[in-house]
Length: 349
Image (tube, rainbow, N blue to C red):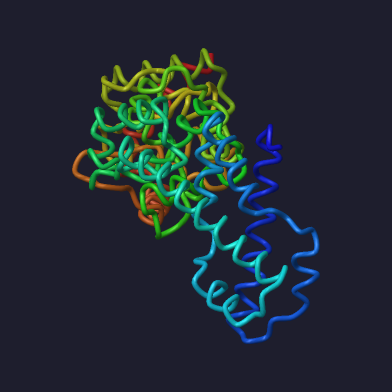
C-alpha cells in the first residue's frame, strides 16, 4: 500500500528503471536476463492503481510530472509479441499497461495545471508563485507571458528571482536554473549576473516590490563590498566633505550624503552613482587627493562610482592620463587644487 510520498517516488523510480532497461535492450537488439529484471514479480497494474489513488488523495505536481518521463511502450509491446506465453510475457504486458495508465494520468494532471498557469513552468504552478510573478509584470519588468521586457536588465531579473526563491522557500540546489528556463536565458546562467552597485535607484524599486524579502545576503556579498572605495575618513568627516563639495558646486545637489558614504565604504546601502558637476580635472585631483593612497584600483573604482553630464561612462585610462597631466602642470591648476585642498583639509580638523 502506498501511504506516503517517499513510497510513491520509489515506485515511480522502480517502474522507470525496469522499463527503460528493457526498452534499451530491445532497441539495441540484445535482450538478456529477463528473469533477473522481473525477479520481484511485481503486479504493475495493481501498483499503478495504488499510485493513482494516492496522488488523487495527496496531489503532488512534481510526482505527476515524473509520470510523463516514462518511455513510450510501443517497442516493448512489440517485443512481447515475439515471446511465448508465460510469466515473462505477462510481466512485460502488465508493465506496458501500467506505464500507459500512469502516463495518461500524469498527462491529465499536467494539462489541467498548464491551463491554470499556461505561461509558467510547472515548478511555479501555484497561486503564490503566480502572484509573485504578477508583481514583476505590473512593475513592467516582465510581459504578460512572464518573459522579460526588452528593457529589463539581467541584474533586475536576478533580484526578482532571488525574491521569488526566498518567498517560495525553494531548495537552494538548482533553484536558479528554473529561472534560466522560465526566462529563456541562454547567454549565461542567471547566477553569474553581477548586480552593479551603481544602480541603487533601480535596486531599491525591486526591494520595495518584495518588502518581505531580506536582500542583504545578495547585496552584501564579499564581492560587492570590494567595489567600494577604502578611505581614512570617519563617517562624520565624510558627511562634512560631501556637504562642502555640494555647496561648492562639485557634486550635484540631488545626491544624498548616504550615496557618498556608501561609495566610501562607510555604510552598507544600495549604491547610487555620484554626479560630478565640475571638470574632469577637478574630479581626478579630488579622487587622487582622498582615495589614491588606500586604493590600488582607484581609477577603476572612479569609473564605477562617478558620472558627468555629457558622458556615458568615464574611462579609466583617460583618468590616469589626466592625473599625470595635472601633476606635470601644477601651475595651470593652482586655483583648482587650492580650492579642493581647502575643502578636504577643513573636514579633517
